[in-house]
Image 1 (spheres, rainbow, N blue to C red):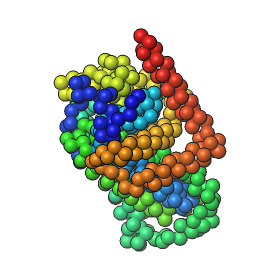
Image 2 (spheres, rainbow, N blue to C red):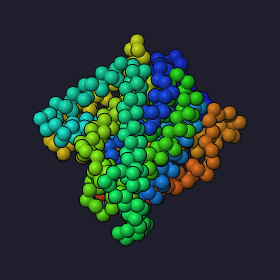
Image 3 (tube, rainbow, N blue to C red):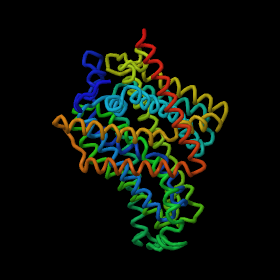
Length: 464
């Protein structure tokens, strides 16, 4: 397709004559959504896996992964400020590298989200049932799907408010956890002896498994940051998209890093990296601090984290399929809006798949969803790589044309290349890791398959 300047990046693909989404989301909601999207159950329950893989040196893995996310968010922020659109990185990839690439990454991201929606619904129901065993997992799961479908059909303003308070709860939980951990380490908790900082060097030193351990942990922790790209999608529906995305990028990125590194520092200082208690790291720290009901509290926070992610992912998936439909890459009826400017058909299409996958999981526990999740497990790596390549191309195009940009990524092109180098390292590590290799190859095959089908359909239409 012909190249264009950066600000009108996909103007031809998204003309103003088409129905447009509203702009009712508040900047504060976008910022909290950005924070909440990266703070999921993976942090509250799964961070211990990274600690066990690398020991205290897992902090290095989080710093590398965090640096990558900050680079990706700034790259997306530059493109989103220039052209806010619900298709976000899919639209930018289309403009930078052609419609086939743009549609492929959009469909891949959509597929990941609708599969993850089902996993989060089942996972939240399963966790809640561990606290109250009388609750039926299948019924709870389907109930969650109904509730969050209703929330997403109420309009972006109401969705944003729900997501804002979900994120607030998660942020407050992390801040409280860090405060309790700090008090414990300073010896301020009555009847609890402070371990000091000895656990950072005990049991084999700071990096007991060397670079191999740090690399293994990087494969675990990088996926914990997946979902931050949804900010670029949501920015299109804020009151002042260009200003909102700039504020979100500048504030969300470093706060995510602080929350993750702060939480992990507390965990490493309080619980030896060799401890079996790291299967639930937050609960382990709270138990050392003699906080009653620690395990139950962390389980409920993890349920909130999963439901928050379900809510955000349903929103993101519906906006992506809406954008694809507007560009002729998905059935046209999915681009229809109701009087609240909600793409009802798009929302229901995402929910339909989620309901189906949830039912399959209830009929065949732990058989269907793991296979589906394995197919899309490396989606965030694909999306981030294509986003950085798109920004590299579009920024250079804009600079050559002398086009002013509302927000310019600092350190270009060096930081963009650094982000791509980190991603290349992660891809290489993945290919040498037995469990992760199949996941990466499956996602790559799915991406190429989607691209091939899209190209065939596009050429068939051109002949017609």
